[in-house]
Image 1 (cartoon, rainbow, N blue to C red):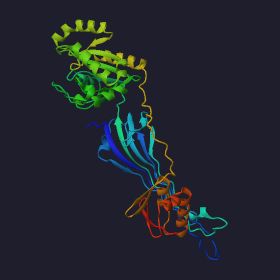
Image 2: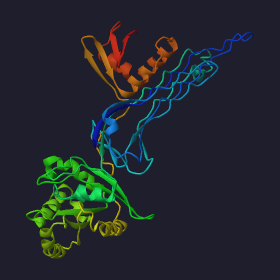
Image 3: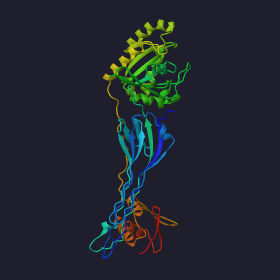
Image 4: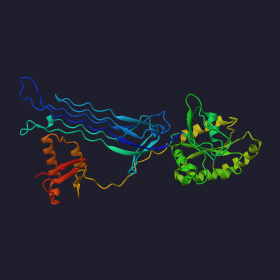
Length: 419
């Protein structure tokens, strides 16, 4: 099954905890602190794997969580940093923040990478908190929490040539005739329900990647027949091969309809070079219509060539003409980051809510500090209290009327207020 849009949850690893430890060695009565730092948590990275052409693998696993960094240890030993979690995606994958809609990146080139969630830094061990006044610091940091994100991944196929046309025009037959692709082919409308990719090698130096786009119908630009989902794959192609059904009641009307649908979906599509092929020339009635169709298309400014995809007749000259057009065509445009307005946010900002169960403090810096505090060590608690004073949280709580014994909630932590 061809999957071209998925949603996934990613979470980078938490940093390892810094160690609170003192050197204990025979004949060294005052060894001093020697707690090492924690290792860095694992990043989450999306990387292009050129052998993929669908997001199908991500359909069955929608949560990706990187490993945490290892804790620090005695003798100033630093914990091991976690390896990055690499998620392979096909070329042409566009990544959005599913919550804000912000465009995060457009992965096109082989082995290209995008860091989507940065691992938390490791906590510092107590060796970092030595001072002239505090020579025996029982202070350390826990590792910084990792980042969490909901992502929406959208795939736009990257091909040299996009094959377009009305249903049953012979697009899949042409792809099968010139490549090793095996699309489902039958004599009824809407046979192709998903895009197919194929590679044709004309000689040692010339090859083409072709994408058979499912047949478009009237209203495709607005989503009729899943047309809007398929149309976006044409945006990545350099050249369009427009297949006309020689047995259609009005091939020129079909031609006009498809071009109109593409223009309504994206006005830039009408600027792409098009080669028109008149298919089913193995039928005598089609051969009779060909001169008139060729002349009419020439008046519209389009070059047309006759073929029979089923009989594999005259397809090679079409391929060489496509090679020439691809070589002269401009590259497709990379998606640019869409600016999303976000009010400037100061990490040190906070807010306080007074509820029945106590005072709830919300803020990026204060909540992160709470998660990185060793609550079992008195020195770490004093350091957190100092941070509350520095950020102005203590003053704000007093202004709210906090009293001895009241409960203060900071993130997931429940504290008791003491003067």
